[in-house]
Image (cartoon, rainbow, N blue to C red; front, side, top):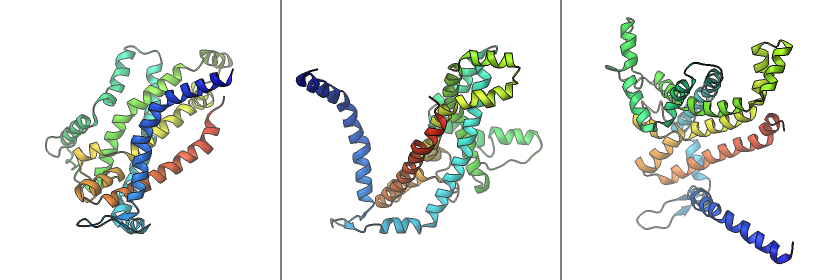
Amino acid sequence: MTLTAHRKMQLYGTLLLLPAAILLTTFAYLPTITTVINSLFLPGFRGAPAEFVGVENYQVLFDDPTFWKVARNNLIYALGTIPTSIALALVMALFVNGKLRGRGFVRMAYFTPTILPMIAAANIWMFFYAPQIGLFNKLLGALGLSGINWLGDPSVALGSVIVMSVWKEAGFFMIFYLAALQGIPPELKEASDLEGTSRWSFFWRVTFPLLMPTTLFVLINALINAVRVVDHLFILTKGGPNNATNLLLYYVYENAFSFFDRTMAATITVVILLVLAVVATLKFTILDRRTHYQ
């Protein structure tokens, strides 16, 4: 290949990458840099220039008990939704991957919650959780039990939000597991049957290890979903009662658009980005080596 042809190929490749580079720069890199810069300044009042304060905003944030309560809520939410959603998705995928009458209908039923807009799903569950006319309290009343204020009691409100999130996400993760199960060579199952291997041994020693790359992918998506919760909190609880269901991204929204403290919102956002960066680093340096076998 001549030098001119090589340069033409380089130019061609650059032009192919240019649209993606422009989008990433405009909607990812520049907002991130701007957010980091804003977290280091205090806004000026009455036209005064912004004042550089360094890490003072982070010190104020870490001294804020509400932030730690919200962070604890988010940790509980993640621990409640991520393993439950993944386990339920795997069970559903194994169920609908076998020989089952009406398999297509069952798959559609499992996946339907995923295609519902989160606002619509939150309104449906608000009806389920309503104290007087809600479905769950009606069922408890039929059993002779007293009703529960699902979204108004601080001790059960976050758990109620977790249940709705699992219902919404499990069907989405099921699709990835189902695709991975259908990609496993059937010869492995035939060989295990010839050896007299039990179903549990085949799943634990063959199926589950082959599903680990998919599990890692689903795990990262579930983690991202656990951090970016805003819309259904806005419909269900607005972070209440007494911040019992407030999560990090909704706390960012509150600071930016309810309290008009965009500096603190930027500071919280940077902390979230740093946590996600640490998780991504662990993913690429440790987990990838333990889950890919090619």
